[in-house]
Image: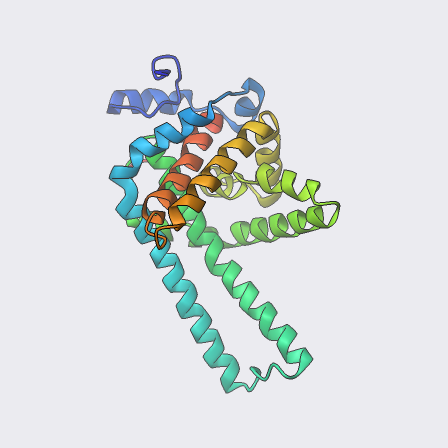
Length: 253
Protein backbone atom coordinates (compact mmCIF):
# COMPACT_ATOMS: atom_id res chain seq x y z
CA UNK A 1 0.00 0.00 0.00
CA UNK A 2 3.10 2.23 -0.23
CA UNK A 3 2.40 4.46 -3.23
CA UNK A 4 4.47 7.38 -1.99
CA UNK A 5 7.27 6.80 -4.50
CA UNK A 6 4.98 6.86 -7.54
CA UNK A 7 2.46 9.45 -6.35
CA UNK A 8 3.69 13.06 -6.79
CA UNK A 9 0.96 14.28 -4.43
CA UNK A 10 2.11 12.27 -1.43
CA UNK A 11 3.02 14.70 1.40
CA UNK A 12 6.57 16.02 0.92
CA UNK A 13 9.17 15.17 3.50
CA UNK A 14 11.73 17.91 2.85
CA UNK A 15 11.97 21.50 1.66
CA UNK A 16 13.45 20.44 -1.70
CA UNK A 17 10.66 17.89 -2.09
CA UNK A 18 8.14 20.60 -1.23
CA UNK A 19 9.60 22.94 -3.84
CA UNK A 20 9.46 20.13 -6.39
CA UNK A 21 5.83 19.51 -5.48
CA UNK A 22 5.04 23.20 -6.05
CA UNK A 23 6.35 22.93 -9.59
CA UNK A 24 4.25 19.83 -10.21
CA UNK A 25 0.99 21.14 -8.74
CA UNK A 26 -1.42 21.07 -11.68
CA UNK A 27 -3.80 23.79 -12.73
CA UNK A 28 -7.48 23.06 -12.24
CA UNK A 29 -7.83 22.21 -15.93
CA UNK A 30 -4.86 19.84 -15.78
CA UNK A 31 -6.18 18.17 -12.65
CA UNK A 32 -9.56 17.53 -14.26
CA UNK A 33 -7.98 16.26 -17.49
CA UNK A 34 -5.42 13.89 -15.97
CA UNK A 35 -7.91 12.02 -13.76
CA UNK A 36 -7.10 10.34 -10.46
CA UNK A 37 -7.79 7.24 -8.43
CA UNK A 38 -7.72 6.29 -4.76
CA UNK A 39 -8.63 3.57 -2.33
CA UNK A 40 -11.07 4.32 0.48
CA UNK A 41 -8.89 2.49 2.99
CA UNK A 42 -5.78 4.29 1.74
CA UNK A 43 -7.32 7.75 2.24
CA UNK A 44 -8.56 6.88 5.73
CA UNK A 45 -5.21 5.31 6.68
CA UNK A 46 -3.30 8.38 5.52
CA UNK A 47 -5.65 10.67 7.42
CA UNK A 48 -5.49 8.52 10.55
CA UNK A 49 -1.69 8.66 10.52
CA UNK A 50 -1.93 12.46 10.75
CA UNK A 51 -4.59 12.62 13.47
CA UNK A 52 -2.12 12.35 16.36
CA UNK A 53 -0.20 15.47 15.37
CA UNK A 54 -3.25 17.50 14.33
CA UNK A 55 -6.00 16.50 16.76
CA UNK A 56 -5.58 19.41 19.19
CA UNK A 57 -5.44 22.05 16.49
CA UNK A 58 -8.47 20.76 14.59
CA UNK A 59 -10.62 20.24 17.69
CA UNK A 60 -9.69 23.74 18.90
CA UNK A 61 -10.72 25.10 15.51
CA UNK A 62 -14.15 23.48 15.70
CA UNK A 63 -14.60 24.74 19.27
CA UNK A 64 -13.77 28.27 18.13
CA UNK A 65 -16.35 27.99 15.37
CA UNK A 66 -19.06 26.74 17.74
CA UNK A 67 -18.18 29.44 20.31
CA UNK A 68 -18.46 32.13 17.63
CA UNK A 69 -21.81 30.71 16.51
CA UNK A 70 -23.09 30.68 20.10
CA UNK A 71 -21.97 34.24 20.76
CA UNK A 72 -23.38 35.41 17.45
CA UNK A 73 -26.76 33.79 18.12
CA UNK A 74 -26.86 35.27 21.62
CA UNK A 75 -25.99 38.72 20.28
CA UNK A 76 -28.69 38.49 17.61
CA UNK A 77 -31.24 37.30 20.17
CA UNK A 78 -30.45 40.29 22.41
CA UNK A 79 -30.75 42.69 19.45
CA UNK A 80 -34.06 41.19 18.30
CA UNK A 81 -35.39 41.23 21.84
CA UNK A 82 -34.56 44.93 22.13
CA UNK A 83 -36.49 45.51 18.91
CA UNK A 84 -39.38 43.42 20.24
CA UNK A 85 -39.08 40.99 17.33
CA UNK A 86 -38.82 37.79 19.36
CA UNK A 87 -42.59 37.52 19.75
CA UNK A 88 -42.91 34.30 17.78
CA UNK A 89 -46.67 34.29 18.27
CA UNK A 90 -46.73 36.61 15.28
CA UNK A 91 -46.26 34.58 12.10
CA UNK A 92 -44.38 37.35 10.30
CA UNK A 93 -41.98 37.76 13.22
CA UNK A 94 -41.41 34.03 13.45
CA UNK A 95 -40.41 33.78 9.77
CA UNK A 96 -38.17 36.85 9.95
CA UNK A 97 -36.40 35.64 13.11
CA UNK A 98 -35.82 32.18 11.62
CA UNK A 99 -34.31 33.63 8.44
CA UNK A 100 -32.07 36.03 10.35
CA UNK A 101 -30.70 33.20 12.49
CA UNK A 102 -30.16 31.05 9.38
CA UNK A 103 -28.28 33.85 7.61
CA UNK A 104 -26.10 34.55 10.63
CA UNK A 105 -25.32 30.86 11.00
CA UNK A 106 -24.29 30.60 7.34
CA UNK A 107 -22.29 33.84 7.47
CA UNK A 108 -20.20 32.53 10.38
CA UNK A 109 -20.03 28.85 9.45
CA UNK A 110 -18.67 29.00 5.88
CA UNK A 111 -15.55 31.12 6.57
CA UNK A 112 -14.73 29.04 9.65
CA UNK A 113 -15.26 25.76 7.79
CA UNK A 114 -13.13 26.99 4.90
CA UNK A 115 -10.31 27.73 7.34
CA UNK A 116 -10.68 24.31 8.97
CA UNK A 117 -10.68 22.58 5.57
CA UNK A 118 -7.54 24.53 4.69
CA UNK A 119 -5.86 23.16 7.82
CA UNK A 120 -6.73 19.63 6.66
CA UNK A 121 -5.52 20.29 3.11
CA UNK A 122 -2.20 21.82 4.12
CA UNK A 123 -1.63 19.17 6.77
CA UNK A 124 -2.24 16.52 4.10
CA UNK A 125 0.58 18.11 2.10
CA UNK A 126 2.78 18.41 5.20
CA UNK A 127 2.76 22.19 5.03
CA UNK A 128 2.90 24.30 8.17
CA UNK A 129 -0.45 24.93 9.85
CA UNK A 130 -1.54 27.06 12.78
CA UNK A 131 -4.70 28.21 14.53
CA UNK A 132 -4.51 31.44 12.49
CA UNK A 133 -5.74 29.51 9.44
CA UNK A 134 -9.15 29.20 11.11
CA UNK A 135 -9.66 32.94 10.66
CA UNK A 136 -7.85 33.26 7.33
CA UNK A 137 -10.92 32.98 5.12
CA UNK A 138 -13.00 35.85 6.50
CA UNK A 139 -11.40 38.07 3.87
CA UNK A 140 -12.91 35.64 1.37
CA UNK A 141 -16.35 36.02 2.92
CA UNK A 142 -18.58 36.78 -0.07
CA UNK A 143 -17.35 34.02 -2.42
CA UNK A 144 -17.68 31.48 0.41
CA UNK A 145 -21.09 32.77 1.47
CA UNK A 146 -22.46 32.69 -2.09
CA UNK A 147 -20.94 29.24 -2.71
CA UNK A 148 -22.52 27.90 0.47
CA UNK A 149 -25.95 29.36 -0.32
CA UNK A 150 -25.91 28.10 -3.92
CA UNK A 151 -24.80 24.66 -2.76
CA UNK A 152 -27.47 24.49 -0.07
CA UNK A 153 -30.25 25.61 -2.40
CA UNK A 154 -29.29 23.23 -5.21
CA UNK A 155 -28.98 20.26 -2.86
CA UNK A 156 -32.35 21.13 -1.31
CA UNK A 157 -33.97 21.29 -4.75
CA UNK A 158 -32.28 17.99 -5.60
CA UNK A 159 -33.82 16.31 -2.56
CA UNK A 160 -37.23 17.64 -3.54
CA UNK A 161 -36.76 16.04 -6.96
CA UNK A 162 -37.07 12.40 -5.86
CA UNK A 163 -34.16 12.55 -3.35
CA UNK A 164 -31.54 10.94 -5.62
CA UNK A 165 -30.38 14.24 -7.23
CA UNK A 166 -29.93 15.68 -3.74
CA UNK A 167 -27.74 12.75 -2.67
CA UNK A 168 -25.72 13.09 -5.88
CA UNK A 169 -25.13 16.84 -5.43
CA UNK A 170 -24.35 16.58 -1.70
CA UNK A 171 -21.39 14.35 -2.62
CA UNK A 172 -20.50 16.14 -5.87
CA UNK A 173 -20.18 19.54 -4.15
CA UNK A 174 -18.06 18.34 -1.21
CA UNK A 175 -14.92 20.10 -2.42
CA UNK A 176 -16.53 23.39 -3.49
CA UNK A 177 -15.76 25.30 -0.28
CA UNK A 178 -12.15 23.98 -0.18
CA UNK A 179 -11.67 25.06 -3.82
CA UNK A 180 -12.75 28.62 -3.01
CA UNK A 181 -10.38 28.66 -0.04
CA UNK A 182 -7.31 26.98 -1.57
CA UNK A 183 -7.54 27.96 -5.25
CA UNK A 184 -9.60 31.15 -5.03
CA UNK A 185 -12.24 29.98 -7.51
CA UNK A 186 -15.50 31.85 -7.97
CA UNK A 187 -18.64 30.23 -6.50
CA UNK A 188 -19.90 28.68 -9.74
CA UNK A 189 -16.40 27.62 -10.83
CA UNK A 190 -15.87 25.91 -7.47
CA UNK A 191 -19.21 24.08 -7.62
CA UNK A 192 -18.68 22.90 -11.19
CA UNK A 193 -15.03 21.96 -10.63
CA UNK A 194 -15.94 19.92 -7.56
CA UNK A 195 -18.78 18.21 -9.42
CA UNK A 196 -16.69 17.37 -12.48
CA UNK A 197 -13.81 16.03 -10.38
CA UNK A 198 -15.89 13.93 -8.00
CA UNK A 199 -18.07 12.69 -10.84
CA UNK A 200 -15.05 10.73 -12.12
CA UNK A 201 -15.25 8.49 -9.03
CA UNK A 202 -18.56 9.47 -7.44
CA UNK A 203 -19.29 6.04 -5.94
CA UNK A 204 -15.82 5.80 -4.39
CA UNK A 205 -16.19 9.24 -2.83
CA UNK A 206 -19.65 8.26 -1.60
CA UNK A 207 -18.14 5.08 -0.14
CA UNK A 208 -15.42 7.10 1.59
CA UNK A 209 -17.86 9.42 3.34
CA UNK A 210 -20.34 6.63 4.06
CA UNK A 211 -17.52 4.80 5.84
CA UNK A 212 -16.51 7.96 7.70
CA UNK A 213 -20.17 8.44 8.66
CA UNK A 214 -20.34 4.94 10.15
CA UNK A 215 -17.11 5.56 12.07
CA UNK A 216 -18.56 8.82 13.39
CA UNK A 217 -21.78 7.12 14.51
CA UNK A 218 -19.79 4.55 16.46
CA UNK A 219 -17.61 7.28 17.97
CA UNK A 220 -20.67 9.10 19.33
CA UNK A 221 -21.79 6.09 21.40
CA UNK A 222 -19.34 6.60 24.32
CA UNK A 223 -20.79 10.02 25.29
CA UNK A 224 -19.40 11.57 22.10
CA UNK A 225 -15.82 11.24 23.33
CA UNK A 226 -14.80 9.54 20.09
CA UNK A 227 -15.46 12.77 18.18
CA UNK A 228 -12.11 13.97 19.49
CA UNK A 229 -10.60 11.56 16.95
CA UNK A 230 -13.28 11.33 14.27
CA UNK A 231 -13.68 15.08 13.59
CA UNK A 232 -9.95 15.40 12.80
CA UNK A 233 -10.14 12.15 10.82
CA UNK A 234 -12.93 13.53 8.60
CA UNK A 235 -11.18 16.88 8.17
CA UNK A 236 -7.90 15.24 7.22
CA UNK A 237 -9.64 12.76 4.91
CA UNK A 238 -11.08 15.71 3.00
CA UNK A 239 -7.57 17.16 2.87
CA UNK A 240 -6.06 13.91 1.56
CA UNK A 241 -8.80 13.51 -1.07
CA UNK A 242 -8.35 17.12 -2.18
CA UNK A 243 -4.57 16.65 -2.46
CA UNK A 244 -4.99 13.51 -4.55
CA UNK A 245 -7.37 15.21 -6.97
CA UNK A 246 -6.00 18.76 -7.28
CA UNK A 247 -2.61 18.83 -5.60
CA UNK A 248 -1.85 21.56 -3.05
CA UNK A 249 -0.18 24.88 -3.76
CA UNK A 250 2.76 25.60 -1.49
CA UNK A 251 2.78 28.69 0.68
CA UNK A 252 5.45 31.09 1.81
CA UNK A 253 5.22 29.79 5.39
